Every structure is written in structure tokens, then in C-alpha cells.
Image 1 (cartoon, helix red, strand yellow):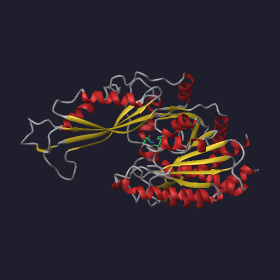
Image 2 (spheres, rainbow, N blue to C red; image 1 turned 90 degrees about the vertical axis):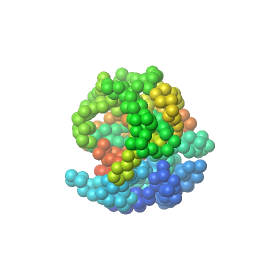
Image 3 (cartoon, rainbow, N blue to C red; image 1 turned 30 degrees about the vertical axis):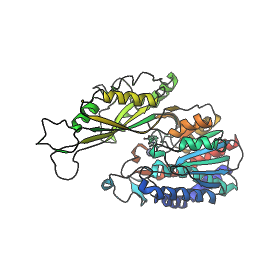
Image 4 (tube, rainbow, N blue to C red; image 1 turned 180 degrees about the horizontal axis):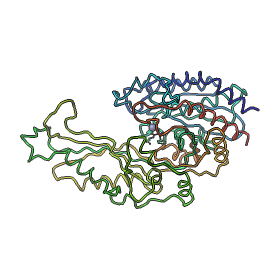
Amino acid sequence: MTLSAVLDRIDTDLPAALDRLFDLLRIPSISTDPAYDADVARAAEWLAADLASIGLDAAVRPTSGHPMVVAHGDGPGPHLLLYGHYDVQPVDPLDLWHRDPFDPELQEVDGRKVIRARGAVDDKGQLMTLVEALRAHKAETGALPCRITVFFEGEEESGSPSLVPFLTENADELRADLALICDTGLFARGVPAITTSLRGLVGEEITITGPRIDLHSGQYGGMAMNPNRVLTRILGALHDDKGRVQVPGFYDDIIDPPAEVLEGWTALGFDADAFLGEVGLSLPSGEADRTPLERLWSRPTAEINGMIGGYTGAGFKTVIPSKASAKVSFRLVAGQDPAKVRDAFRAWVRAQLPADCSVEFHDHGAAPASAMDISHPAFAIALDALSTEWPGKAAYIGSGGSIPVAGYFKEVLGVDSLLAGFGNDDDAMHSPNEKYDLESFHRGTRSWARILHEVGQA
Ligand code: BES
Ligand code: ZN
């Protein structure tokens, strides 16, 4: 039978597949930092060449930002649009890494093999599960399992500025029956999942200016207002002691998930203590009157992602800084309008500003939340295929993360998305020492091979 031969080939080809992934992981494609622009372009070239080697008609497609990689291949059955992103997050703080983030290594941790490198899970390792599944199918059968369009992005980690223009300009070329997105996680170790909701995101940078220049804090302290003090007072008031965000109107437009979705989540038996325990915590933050999975998947949040102000170097310096700034993000859920949330936040900050301080805002992008339509027959096929491949039974889950492309595929192309991915909570996404379990890479590739095969036959 074709499928078992394809799966066998994936097994025997695993060392070579790892070599290919390591080649890609060695390219420091950090999209948010212009110093790495040439590396981002190099990663796109690498992928286009690799896709061409499988026989796809592949090209690096320029945008006004980082390039997209688009490839086409003919096959039977429905037309599938495969998405992943080849850009990665910055590596700082570098001193917390145990080795060079761009010198990937296969390591053994607690008896499990892990691939250690920036981008291992987010998203190069995951993206390559799609590519390796195609490769195995092509090598074994001489053809692709379905008609395929590959669409790999290089700006996902930096707000996807070129995404909507690119989708709009190339809509006819990219439109497909269904998109398969590989950038999410398992529900738990060994338990596969299809993600049916994603939170949206609003990114804001706020800079408060007080005195014209940095001041001696003895000479001026007691008279001059300190912008660090203004900033921390405002941000300190962002949540009340029940974890609720205090920006007026923040919760007004929320649409709760349907009852059957919430019941499904309850049935998952999420272990909140273990989830927090793994990162050294024990007390849940967030909205006190909501369940853990609601807090993570269907309730909006505000987080202070970074703060800069005054002297932060070695030693000590008695200074009242001229400026203080913070990077703040809001995760949004169904019903919330990103523009409205941004405006409400800005108005709320301005209202709390002392008369002789000023504030500037910088927009770091936004995307609304998205919920998937699971009526396409591929969803039932994928649940079955995932349950066959993995020890646990596949579940529908939500995600607290944001993958703006899912919403834009629907909005711009009219294409629904099926999100499956194989990350584990302990993969240290966006963090030092990021990893991807070898099991995730291997079973992930086999999962896509099964899904592509079954969808192609259906
Ligand atoms: N792979 C993540 C999204 C994700 C996070 C999925 C957690 C499942 C669980 C993706 O690469 C990501 O990090 N997205 C950013 C988007 C932002 C920069 C627009 C995010 O969620 O912060
Ligand atoms: Zn990410």
C-alpha cells in the first residue's frame, strides 16, 4: 500500500531530513532586525531550491519587506495551500543560551532526543515536516498526493507587513480548497491536536518623555518628575487585583466560544498545575473567575513585553532619565476590534499623563482573533490520521498565540485553514535554548504524509 511505503521512506530518510533541517537552522533569519536581511533572503533561497529539488515549480518572490517562497505542484484531489514561516525570533539574551543558537545540535534530554536551535520549533522544524512529507510521497510514488501550493513567509515574527498586499496581489495564484498551517502545538506530550481558534494581537510601544535631558537625581530629585515613575504607575494600573484589564471598554465586544467548544475544552482535562509548574510557577495570574483554558484561549490579555528607562548598564548611576518606554501587547479574542483596542489604550494612557510629560505611541501591528470553520471533510480525516500516528487521541483545541495568516487566508482568499503542529510546551518558543523534539519532527512528518495521502484519496 502506498501510504505504508511513504511512511517507511520517512523513517529511513530521517537522518537526511535532519541534515536538511540543520542546514536551514544554520541560517540566522531574524526578520525583525535589519542586520539579518541578507540571511532572511538566504533562507528563502534555500527553501526555494529545496522545493525545486522535489520537483515543485518554486520561486523566491520579492515583497517590499522580506520575500515569500511560493511553489506549485500538480496532483490529484483537492488543492491544498501549505503554510509555514522561515523567519525566527531574535536570540537575546544570548548569554542564557548553552550554545550558539544557529549551530543546531541533536541532544539527549531525559531520554528524549531534541533538536536544539533558534527556529527549531518556531517554525523551521515544523515547516520542514510539510516539506519532508511531500518529498517522501514524491520519492515513493513519483507524484504528489494532492495538488499543492506552498506558501512560506519570512515576516511572521515581525508582524507580517507584506502579507496582505502579497495575498491580495496574488490571490488567484494562491487560492486553494483548504490551507494547512504548521505553526502550532500538541495538546500535551504525545497528544496531537487541531487548533480551531487563535487569539489576535495588538502591538504598542509607548515612550514617555519628562525632562529635556537626563538629570542628576540628587540635584533634581524631589522637583523633577521621573518618566520611569510615570510609566510604571500607568502600567501598574493596567490590571486590577482580580487580573482584569482596566482599559475602558476592553471587554465590551467579546464573543464567547459556543457552549460545545467550551465543553470540549473541559473534557480535555488540562493540568494547570503541571503547566505552570514546568516554568517554575504555581499561582495562576489572569482573570480570577475564568478557567485556565478560557484564560489562555478565549479571554483577552494585556502583557508588558519589555521596559526600557534610565540606567540599565553595569554598576549604578543616579539619574532621572529623560525618557522611559515600554512594549505592550494585547491578545485579542473573537469580537474585539484591534483598532478600537489600540485607540482605547492610547486614550487611557494620555488621560493619566502629568501635564508636563508627553507620550508618543508606535504601532507594532495588529491582527484580529480567528476561529476556524471545521466543516471541510479534511478535518475529520486529519483527526483520524493524527490519532493513528500518535499515542494519544487527537483533540480540537484553542491557542493563545497569534498566527495572523489564518485570518487573512479567509479574508483575502476565502480559504479556510486547518492548523496542526507538533510543538511541546517545553520547547522554549521565543526563548533561549529553543528546541523541537525529534519525535515531533519525525511523527509530524508522518502525520502530514498520512493527512495528505488520505485527503488526496478522499
Ligand atoms: N508559532 C507562533 C504562534 C503560536 C504560539 C502558536 C503559541 C501556538 C502556541 C507564531 O510564530 C508566533 O509566535 N506568532 C506571534 C505573532 C506576532 C508576532 C504577530 C505571536 O503569537 O506572538
Ligand atoms: Zn513565533
